[in-house]
Image 1 (cartoon, rainbow, N blue to C red):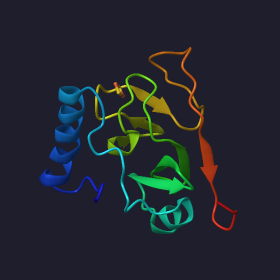
Image 2 (image 1 turned 60 degrees about the vertical axis):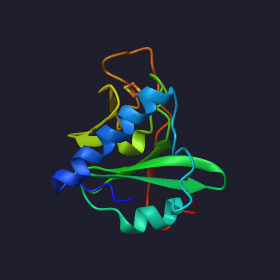
Image 3 (image 1 turned 90 degrees about the horizontal axis):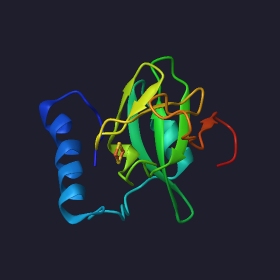
Image 4 (image 1 turned 30 degrees about the vertical axis):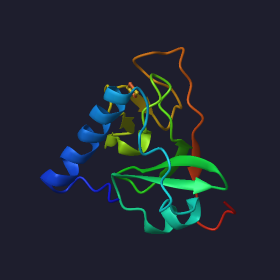
Length: 129
Ligand code: FES
């Protein structure tokens, strides 16, 4: 599944997924066997891209900002469990496609809910993942 935001089809796709999550009360496509490893996702990263990845059995969201810095965080929104890898980038923030919560990747916070912390790791090429 591509997470590029360049066409209408890819813009609509996360919204449909979010709708499906709301309808069934969870994530109907929770398992994504095609998830690349964190290293593979980093190697393919493009500015303003959000994608899914894995490390072992753990699922991650990999976000690359406009300046090329990439970050990994668990692929579960702290609001209601939506897949953050369905989100999109605005500045230094990842926006969850499901209800619009925003996460500042550099600061590791949710500006809308200051008490909410997110576990973000900056990914750098050449480091073991
Ligand atoms: S699941 Fe609600 S904002 Fe992410």
